[in-house]
Amino acid sequence: MNLKGSLKLLSEKDLEDIHSSTLEILEDVGVRFTVLEAREVFKENGFKIENDIVKFKPKEIENALKNVPPKILRKGLDSKWDVNLGDEKVYFGVGSLPIWVIETDYTRRKAAYQDFLNFTLISESLENFSIGNGVVQPQEISPKVMAAIWNQNATIRMSKPSCCWYARNFSEAEDGLRILEVAAGGREELKGMKTWAITICPDSALQWGKSIIGLLVTAKAEVPIEVLPMPFCGSTHPVTIAGTLVQGNSETLAAIVLAQLVNPGCPVIYAPSYGGIMDMATGAHSFGAPESALHSASFAQLGKWYNLPVDMMMGTSDSKVPDGQATAEKVQTILLPALAGADCITMAGGLLDFALSASYEQLVIDNEIASQIQRVLQGFDVNPDTLAVDAIKEVGIAGNYISCQHTYKHFRKEFYFPSLFDRASRGAWEEKGKKDLLARAKEKVTEILSTYKFTSPLGKNKIKEINGIVKQICEREGVEINWRQK
Image 1: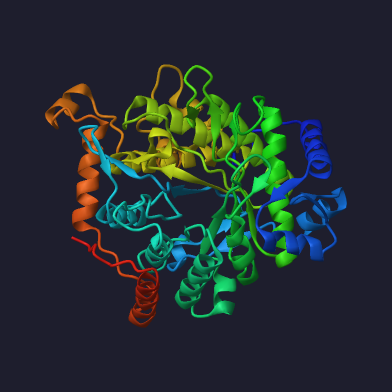
Image 2: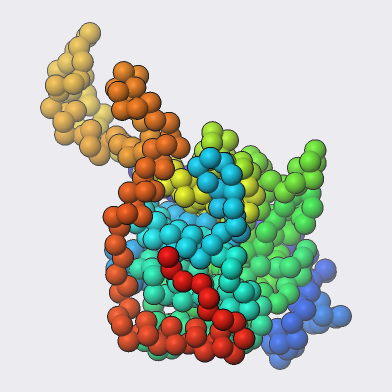
C-alpha cells in the first residue's frame, strides 16, 4: 500500500471548477510580463498583448500542458541520489535562502560563507533528503556574484540534485548555464542529466518580472524549471483558499505556456506552493498555518490532475527557534501535500522564522521528520500473512506476540526505528544525561561536521574550469574574493 496521492481534498468537480476559473482569469484578465523578451515570444506566437499584459485562450493553455513531460528523472552525480519525479515516491529537499543562522542558545547571527559550506556538507550527509542545497545566503558575498558562488557550490560540492540561483538579468542566466554545461560535460549532456533546476517566482499578483529571464535562457537547454508563485491568502492572493488556488494556478500556467513556446517539451515542475496566509492579527506572513497545509495539498492534487511533475515547497516554520512549534508546523505542512501526491517537497529542511533563518539542529531534526513521513507514506499491506489469523490463533487469549515467529518475520518492515527521537525509558534517558531533542540534534551536527567527508564526483578538470569561470565573473563584476573556508 502506497499512500502517495491518497488524500483527496478536492472533488473532480472542484478541480474542474478551479481549472475553468483559471481559464477565465487568463483569458479575461491575463498576466503581465514586464520583460520585453518574454512578450516578444508571445507576440511571435500570435498571443494577444495589451499594455504588457498577455491574454491566453483556453486552447493555448491546453496545447502547452500537452507538451510538458509528466515525469522527470533528475540524475544525481551519484546514481543512488537519482530523483524520479512522477514515480510512486515522495522526495524531500532542504531549505534555501535564509540570511540568518540560529545558534543553539537561540541567538541569531548573519549567515557566513562557512555556514554555506557547512550546511551543504550536512545536507549531503542526511539520508532522507534526496535534494541538496547550500541553504543560507552568505552575507559577506556581494549580490553581484552570489549566483556564481551558489552555482559553483551546487555543482562541485553536491552529489545530489539541487537548485541553482535564480537569474535577475541575462548575463547572470548565461553565466549560470555556462557553469552547468561545464559540470555536465556539454549542452547535450546537460539536457540528459537534469540534475540542476532553476526556480522562477512572480514579483507581484499576476505579474512576472525579471525572474522570467531564467526561464528564457535555460529552457533552451532543458534545465528543469520550477514555477513557483508564493501565494499568501489575504495579501498577494485572495483570502479564500479556493481563490488562492485559482490565482496561483493562473500564474503558474502562464509561465508554463511561455516555457513550451521557448522549447516545446521543456521539463517544467508545477510548484505554486511556497507561501501561507497573512495573519490578520499581526500582519505577518505565516508559513506554518494549517491553511498552508490545505492549499499546498490542494495544489499538489491539482498539479497531478494536470499530469505534471509536482514540487510543493513546504516545511518552513514561523517559530524563531527549533522547538515544539517548529516540529508541529513542519509535520502538518509536509505531510498533507505528501499524502496529496506531491512528487517532492523541498524547503523541508532547516528553515525557521518565516524562512529568514536556518538552524543546523533543525536541519537534522527535519531529517528525522522526513523519515517518519516516509514511513507513513509506505502505508501497510493487507494480505493473508499480514492479517495474522494463524498468529492470533497460535497466541490465543491473554497471550503476547513477543516470541511469536510472525513478529520476527514482520517487525523490521512494519515498524519505524528513529535515529534521533527518544523512545527510552525515563531511567535510561536520565542515565544518558537527560538530553532533550535539541541537545541530541547538536551532537548529531557536531558528529557530521567532524567525520563526514565529501569527494566531488566531477573530477579535477571540471572543478578547475568551474572555479576559473567563477573567478572571471568576480573580476568582471569588480568583486574581490576575500572570503575563504576556515
